[in-house]
Length: 408
Image (cartoon, helix red, strand yellow):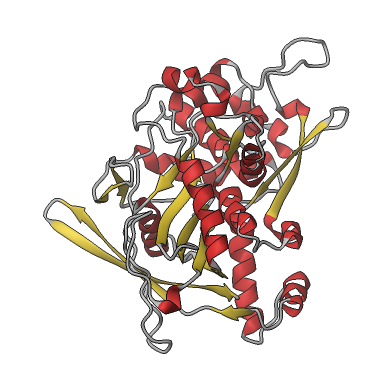
């Protein structure tokens, strides 16, 4: 699964070199319990949006953002170095599937996640479990994804040769992963990648529950049938399309639509997770300084735009692995600024916050944020995730513990 535009760009290079492979769909099955020292507090397995009895203690509820980093750490110092982890992860898509975990999404579509699940860019998943103002319970698992069409990668990269222009492209197949696929990603990543996902759990009231519910259901309304052809997706009018793009912010585009606007709606996984915190009124905007990835990218690396001679610039894919890929900027050329919320930065922040709370050393900015929110932030209990992979007649149990922070 492609996780946001940069992942699309770099895995497309591998797809071109390996005749293109289609990443399998995924499914998720999650059970979370507090650590034995904390007592038992399981996260329900209810289907997204499904009702379940609410106790008095559940009035309001929680919005939990789960995040994990790339399977292979990314060196952002140069385009060339940044591409290598994506190539390694993409190569796994072309290996035979030996074991898998099956699932059925909230939309009734069957899928599976491979035993070798890896992530090129990391991922962000939201779990909403709360009580609405009228007393009705609401629960959902959701995350934002897109660009699962290899033909689009190949068209942009090999035929039009737009190079890193793919970072600024609006893909028409953005969609919400809704339901059990999400917690299965957590279980498989934690068990197979060596770095467990972390969580940010925010306690919310019933009004925030309703606001977050409305946003989740709005984004789910753009769902299209799995296997839909590219031509079908391209035929949809812009106002009926959910774009997978770094050019759009889910929160801003949602607010615009709610205010009567008709602009494009889109984003990526980390922006979507944080958008739910924003719409619930629980996001601290000062965190942008630590959560956003910023890169100035030279137009010398971007194809599909006029070059210095007035001709359409073309960037052959392999040139990005030569001298051209040794720097993000090039003298004599304008830069375009790329920015996006980075799952790896959010994951790192949560880890450092826990270290600080335990009395250890952490980054000054993290310490400053904790001091500002003294009494509101605590280290959350361990959550144990479990799942089972099947292959032939055999099955393999997966288990790992996740740690995070809890905010009042």
